[in-house]
Length: 333
Image 1: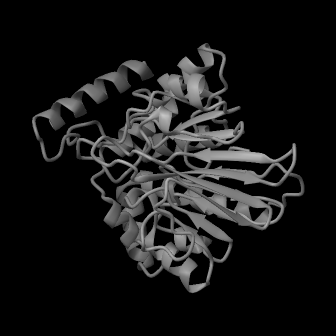
Image 2: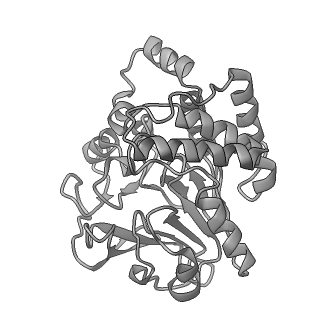
């Protein structure tokens, strides 16, 4: 039932978008608060490997997402100075925003309380392509885009941004990192230090090594994305994270080693099977950039979980690779 509902929903949305309907999801059935809250509880009590257990809950959440009409600017504008009454009104109107904020609060709480002693870091998935990482020596984020992101400025030692698109960074967080004198690695000049427009560059922070390489976003934006291969620790037990942002070409992925985690865009045209078989010998593949709220009523609309990411996960597993689809708030490691 979940699959058939999701399929009908996607057909309706795509039909309206093709016909340039300004509100392509206006007549989708509303989601009752109780149903949405139950779906969130299911997601919180399961893991990113529990696809079947999460299926019905993800359909409920996706329906609620599809009914929204937000933008990246709207999300960024809801910051620490936004009156509580406005936040409450948004939460009441859009249950997805309650989940969006609830999971961020949960991550911040876990992030502060978690102590890492070995080489394996703690990694959380925030939203879109954002992750935060805590190692035994430092903490950092990649593509952190969330309205509450500035709360992380004092907790992070450095920040990495794959490219200059608003769904991959929060400018207020970057300003605070700059004000605190903390490094921000990017390929655009809004960031201080670690600026890179070269095809390849390497930086180091304590015992964390960051390899930066350039990649195409799409055929219209060549070399617009910086991929980050982050090696946490040193020696044979070092843990490696490879994040390719909105890269759409498997042959532009150039890891120096065998990453433990690979984060890639699930709907930019990147062929994950080619990635796994030809260029990225990762131990775990994580297709992300689903359930993104800033492209809801455009040709770049966020994809439903069954459109691409779950297909990618299932095909990779069938071919013998390890893959999972995280949702907001999931702890990856």
